[in-house]
Every structure is written in C-alpha cells, then in structure tokens.
Image 1: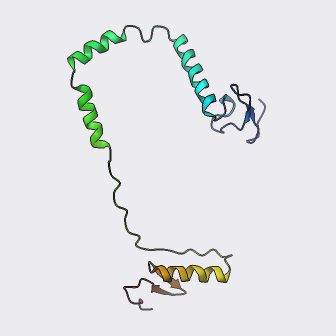
Image 2 (image 1 turned 90 degrees about the vertical axis):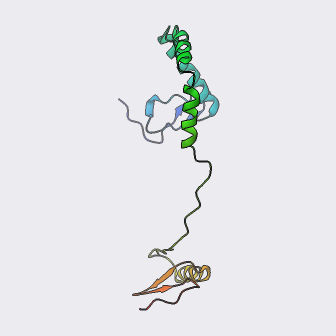
Image 3 (image 1 turned 30 degrees about the horizontal axis):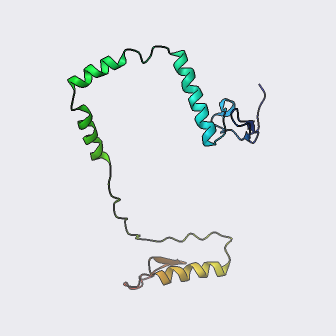
Length: 145
C-alpha cells in the first residue's frame, strides 16, 4: 500500500478540484468541503442506501398511524419536555476576580512595563514583583510584604 504524505491532495469526484483530505478520513474521502459537492455526495449515498435496502419504508405508515392514534398526546408531551431543556437566556457572566500576567522569558523590558501599566490603570488585579504581591484594585490597600 502506498503511503501518502499528510499534504498530498486528492481530486474531488464532483467538481474536479483538488483538495487536502481530512487525515481522519484519508483515502475514503471523495468530495471537497464545498457545500454543493457535499450535498451531491450525500444524495448519492442516500440513493445507494435505498437501492441496497428495498422495501425498508414499506408498511411502516400503517403501524405509525395506529400507534399515533393510541398515543395522541405523545408529541405534545415530548415537545414540552424539550422546551424545559432549552435555555432561553444566557446566564450573567461571572465577574473577573483575578488577572494573572505570565511573562515569557523573551519579552523586552518595554513590553513588560506596558503590561504592568495596563494592569494598574484598569484597576482589576494584582501585580507580583519579586517576592511581593501588590493589589492594584483602586478600592483596596496594598497588601503587606
């Protein structure tokens, strides 16, 4: 079996354009990500399934019609249960309690000072300098060393 590099392209069966297949699908992927190609692939796949499973849908309507007559409230109850699961409103966001500044080793001195100035100006967190921690919120006093 010939091995493919992860960047090798395939030709789309439907539009003829080249594409990089998803690595999880590999050689089985037939179409590119364009919507028209995906729809054509899906329609062809469904047609093949129906041809391979003839009579699957025959005789099912009578069974369902009978069952629905015996359970007239089923759909209403099912929908009511689903509505209870749906969240209509977003919960209020939790307030930001702390802001941590992780400084990469390769930052320049000017960039670090800009970040420190930003933390102090917004008044929303703590600044750690060496072994001291300083509270930068405007409504509190500096913490003891």
